[in-house]
Image (cartoon, rainbow, N blue to C red; front, side, top):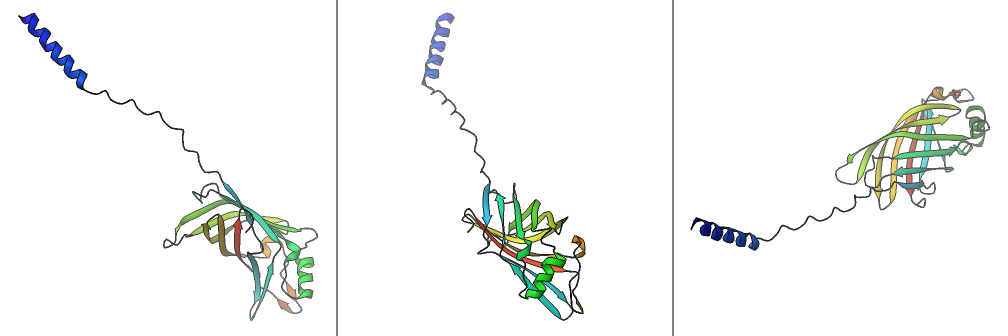
Length: 209
């Protein structure tokens, strides 16, 4: 009897197990997500601005250039990741609107024949959160500025915005003549301050727009 009862119980258990559906096999893991490739944008001088101001007590002289260009490399998904910028300016293109003054600036001060190009290359870029949800962010760009044959590290604060493939950056930075071995300008009996205010608004896109 015990043997027969054991056989009946075994048969019932076996039947119940057959009614339980098997667990589905795990789905094969998909390929790892491909990280976004950095985008290279070109600074467009036609829609950008690069100006400077020099002054002395009671007078300010403004200047500008349109002969500049450069590239910005960034990760569209994370502007603070692997971002960099290179800016090149033709030194002889700097102008203040006064022919005599500009000739002296290019010859005696900038020595454009010896140092024809002004170059900035970033070494690090720190990008903050969006300001008030508007898409504009604060950034601090550190890099090497080569001017008049002298290279120095500068910190450039800026406001940046990336929208539909176009980057806009604007800000200003203070420089001095003495840091770059440039004689302080003198016009007749007037001596300018040892300070240069540089302002910029750069627009960069895939095709330089």
